[in-house]
Image (cartoon, rainbow, N blue to C red; front, side, top):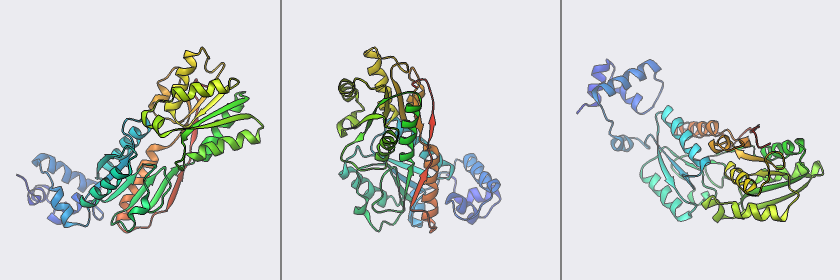
Length: 325
């Protein structure tokens, strides 16, 4: 079995240089880094991750806690986080909390025992003040940060404004917003605030409705969509707080013979893959998930190296127009 010394000898480098490449420490030229990786592949060298983590304060592993793995938004986050981590020579440990506090606490403890370089938290229910004085950076994505290193959000308020302005600009006069989970305060709630402020400013009739934890967990919004359309028959424009909800709005409209976009215009949020797979495609507010994921991994790397990082970062959103409007 090949050793670190074998890699150093074959690549013509010192053991210290090869070690710095493997541990992502200090400045190493891309040419040198690639040479080490080429020799590792040639010799089939497998670093001992456990030994490496014991020799350092942390490993090259990042914990990622999400409430769902099948939801298109979190699937995209996971994919982009994994790619960003790989680009910086990190691996991820993925945890699916299903919104349960006890699972999240257990996963944090697992991250501690695995000496992770940091944790990225995408859950919206976890109370991070329970984990003060962690030995690693804690980065939150799209949730309010009670305790931790930094929070990353998109401009949810601006997203709600863009959705309302677009629907009104397309001639809608009676708008409906279908939001996220009630009783869980989170950054995404600001989408509703931006939407309602524009409706009031433009003197447009509107209504807003939040969903439940059960609907969110099961991604089944058909019943609430049908009830809202029954209760607001004049509705000609809907802003859904996710593309999953927007896609189900299209299905309910199709079943009821409501033509989109002729009779009903629909705007979603996130710009995940489902938005371009429906007929018609969904006009949506693009959340820059890839850029947010890259920032989260970068903050883990910088903070674990002792560098100060901003406690809150907000990313701009844009409207992507498709056939639903």
